[in-house]
Length: 65
Ligand code: F3S
Image 1: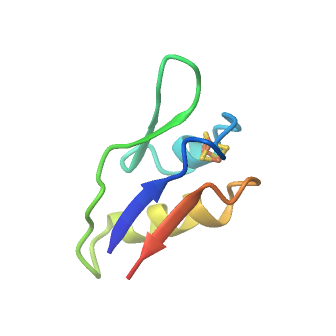
Image 2: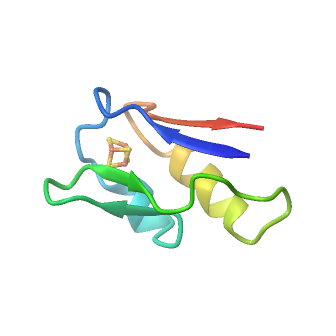
């Protein structure tokens, strides 16, 4: 699965990296960067990636299976 962030949509709510710090991180402005853009299905990181995406109020994170 592929994880991408729409930089134009992210406003820095920070829920993604609070919920899944192994997958997402903050840049210098509090906006999201993706630490692991490709995750194997079934990986322990998968749940965090999905939680981060589902909890972004801006829907800035996209997961492509
Ligand atoms: Fe940005 Fe959404 Fe995370 S606004 S910092 S991608 S929770």
